[in-house]
Length: 115
Length: 156
Image 1 (tube, each protein chain N blue to C red):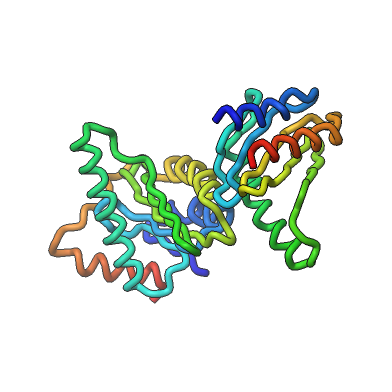
Image 2: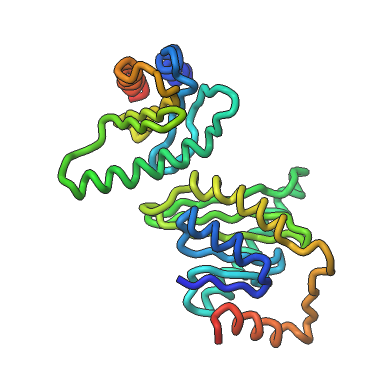
């Protein structure tokens, strides 16, 4: 579990990140989370899992391989996701002005830790 | 896929749940196995079997919980190779409603089903009539009631 905590710490320490989660991609369930108050963890996890499932099928249909990183920019924030090889999604919920490059880097490092 | 209800107040919450959770089959029933509404079932026999088996699971797990001195289970999930099964209770003004959900693993997930089930619980509670005592099915009326319910559920 401490490995998961370290992985989440990498992401949440970036300025503008409001929370980080490890989500089981197939189930859409929360494995571990560090979220600011007001963020609905189970809802983010369920919808991220569902999105991962649909995106992977779309990418397979398009013949463009597996997803490595997604960035969903919304009006009041952003959702950034890196799938780890173990089937866990590393999810960051961030503010609109966040440094996306830095979050991506930390998500990739967290994915390596999670395995 | 058809969605039909014997108790009409269950219909809108059920339709919304089916749409959002992408469920394949849903059955709403009393803990005794009396069907209130269904989505996706094609045959009356399947509904009767699913209702009987679900109410048996609820009865046996509730009894296990009682013997262990625990409150009744909140939800029970089973993940198969292609389908998942979710069984849980929803309290309403008309008594407890047992909800059975079967979902395809490549279309939905347990996370989605759990998420939207919380919404379904809230909506069923809000939609259930506050007045009136839930109908008790007497042994003498059982067959006729069952037949009427199946006619409604399958539009016969």
